[in-house]
Amino acid sequence: QVQLVESGGGSVQAGGSLRLSCAASKFNYFLYCMGWFRQAAGKQREWIASLTHDNGQTLTLYSNSAKGRYNISEGNGKYTLSLQMSRLNPEDTAVYYCAADRWRKCTLTDVSSDFAYWGQGTQVTVSS
Image 1 (cartoon, rainbow, N blue to C red):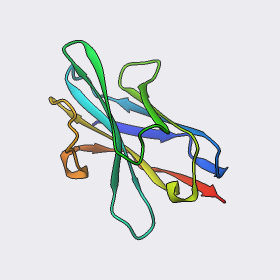
Image 2: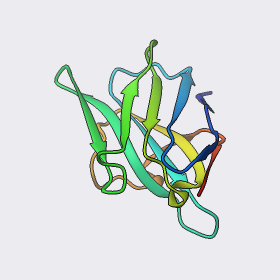
Image 3: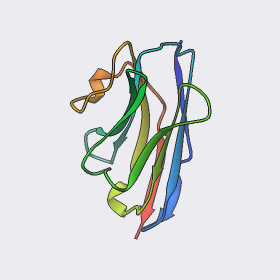
Image 4: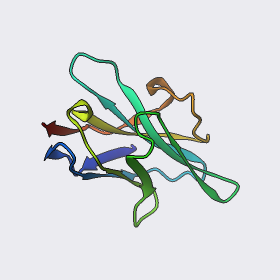
């Protein structure tokens, strides 16, 4: 069974940075989409960024709230994902989730229901 395990959450002051990581096990597909979502208290789960491969190139996609501040990348191993977050503000406080889906590329219209596999989430708290 596919497992996604996030790490790297924590507390940080406004203006600071955090790096989240996600490791996928038993996820052996040559065509896949991996992404990050977040869910603040009382709000719907929000897509942040995704990474996929298209004709041998790595394609990264970002929501408007993530552009310029967040960077999604692959980790050292295959099926690992990182999210570097900078210039954090209290509105970034949320549980951050890693998600993955197989046999397709990511798109800008992806929503949470498009992803089959999810991590348990990691809390990010930004204080002012």
